[in-house]
Length: 322
Image (cartoon, rainbow, N blue to C red; front, side, top):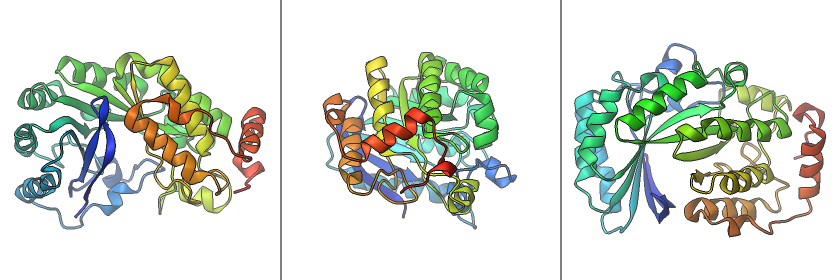
């Protein structure tokens, strides 16, 4: 069963998040052979699709984990799009949201969708069911630069489509969570930092919450092939700290989140190996509380090397050290 809880930021305050991965057939882009270059999540979708009734019962079982919790966010993933009718029928979506509406301790609900699948009516009916709960639709923008989205990610949609989807979501009564990818392939560490800062600037008018997704190496992907050839290195954790500090200072009223999955491993974001746990813990504490104090005064001897790599714009294939 793929659901779990962890300490997290819940509608702006510290609480507990329940993460649920629904066993749907996964992203339609993956199914037609046009998956994002960094993503292998749809590969884990069940080979024998679950019935819509089984999916609803699965959510019922997962929700038992939050009984007795005081402040909860429910974040639902499908390895695709919650608003894709080929993954979840409209009636199934409504049944799930009616379950969530019954829990007074659920303060936040997040679903995911590709921007081209967002429709006003689909969002509106869900927003109406959960009433005044903090309801967000998360969109994987990844970058506001259409060229990077095409060449480095194979995203298959544009910033203009993201803007249209965001406007639809807000007009339907929900909020917008924007996923951005830190350091797509073919970018130096410096370019990765600058790209995500520029993307935040461009997306800020259409975004309530930013989630900084830090690249990790998933099996069977284009990113893995380049990583195996020492032509790509996952981001430094120092880069994550830099982006989060800048983003929160620049947009103090926005919620800025990041969970550096795989931190400290060679496949995940990492520094030198000695300070990785300390820095990753600080990033997670900041995300849960939105307090910059956790990112201040962080230091280690490897920070000087990171600073040099960023300052000089060194490419990964020129210098792979860790």
